[in-house]
Image (cartoon, rainbow, N blue to C red; front, top):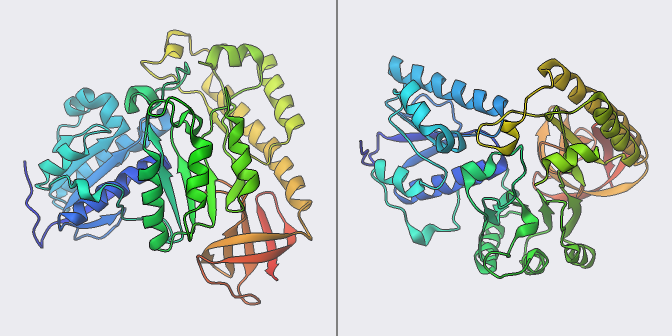
Length: 414
């Protein structure tokens, strides 16, 4: 079924999952607007007659959320609230045949690399001249920049290569041009994302070129912060630290998912904000204690924890999922309780210090911002009393820290 763009057609794109999915939705919106469609993002407006759900299929909780969201819009279609429903993204890539069988009310399913086909179904053309153009859904002053797609790692627990394919780097020039376009729109902070940043360049340049890319991006006028997400710990390119040291607009921030600290667990899984996994097959009380002690000793500035999900098609699926779900949840909660204590101590030590803060929003009685050590939504925030201070959203300001809690800092503009 093709849908010609008319004044009556309005498309609502609903994005689930990670920031990489968000970028895909922003690119999709750019293409649709370039074809004269009226497009909104995760909008509750009742006048949107077409819905596109961009799904996540990474772990059980994400898959459940995606399916529930699809079913929600199936009911909306049955009731006549919307006319058409399309599904794309990772869940659709991985389980298309099953989804078509179980939820036939969806008009069409598309994989992660099938944007041109989705556009064609809607009666739109894929415009190559719009490559790099996006409709931002984040605050106007920051944006995610995807530097590659896919992953060549074979971590036994991870299904991402099944959904996103092999690693494919974008050329340096293309990424820099995108950064320039974002800066021209007022973006001051870009966050580099990929399944694995540190592999960047090996496929098209035959060598790792993340450091070189950082130098080029740091030269883009208007970009004041560059942040690195999802850096793989093995064979980390140490030359990346040089531009971080030399260039003031490259944040001293790395998101490295270490996953575990127990040698048996690491050996089985492998294939500094960090992420830890609990409940991998065979994880004993002793393994978890090693992990707990490691987190306690290392005292990471930022850390998240998640429970192992038994994913079809991965090497780990051949193992017995022998850690009880309740035990998994208890271990994750125990780790995060420890991290809460660590974060409280580290935040308390910042009282009296002055930090450069980028302000994202006003919430209640406070202006809310972040330091260079904090990424949106996942890390700490800095709160400034709006009755005694004034800042503009999207601007930087120096803030003296006057108080601290587990995951929040309080301060005054100086």
